[in-house]
Amino acid sequence: MKSRTPARRYTAIGLILTALMLFPVYWMLNVSLTPQQDMRKDPPDLLPLHPTFEGYKAVLDDQLPYLGTSLLIGLGTVALTLLLAAPAGYSLARLRPRGGGALGLGLLIAQMIPGIVMAMGFYGIFLDFGLLNSWWGLIIADSTIAVPFGVMIFTAFMSGIPGELIAASRIDGAGTFRTFWSVVLPVSRNALVTVSLFSFLWAWSDFVFANTLDGGGDLRPITLGIYKYIGNNNQEWNAIMATAVVASVPAAVLLVLAQRYVAAGVTAGAVKD
Image (tube, rainbow, N blue to C red):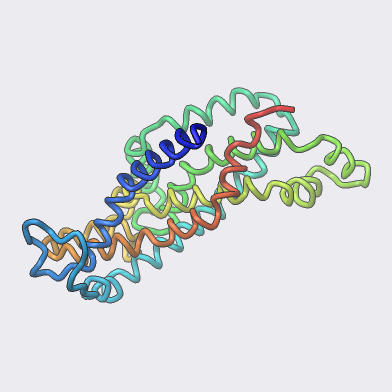
């Protein structure tokens, strides 16, 4: 009985901390269902006693184009990140190119550069190349955040692939590319899912690049949609919160579906046999 007491105590503490962290999410959902006339009620209702879906109707009327653009940018960022990061990670992990250590250090330093600094640099480059206010420009910008992270994850994961597996493919006559494509990538599923998930989430939630590089384009992501919506409807908090709820759903669903792959992908390479 005594041995169970600490476990129950820790469980209770964990539940309390989880409830505190999730309360803002609950309150966002509560406000999204609260009628406009009850918004300034004091004290506020802890539950939507008279729920309304007017906010979600406004989302369907106004925000769907922004959601579609964010989905396009997110998927494009994932594709470009995997295209660049997976071969680079394999090269650093298994081919040992000259200068690989310096490249790894450079990727680590790239993770420390503030996004606003990169956005200012991109603005000048995109202005010269005519990429401002374009969704493909945002894909390129968001990929610069995701690729260094992806290379480090792939390098750590692919370093742990048994050398015998790669040697066997070489004996069977597979070249470097065939070994990478047919042997290394299939066994790197956890790393692929991890990099894809984080790349998508970074692109989905990006505001700095979007506001700096695509503030006046026809195709703008949901972060700019919410920003514009707040400016135009700063009293309609149920519609604003409904937009935030809808924008959070894809990220939450992806995290739930991919959590076990992410746990394995992030910790890969942390322990050597």
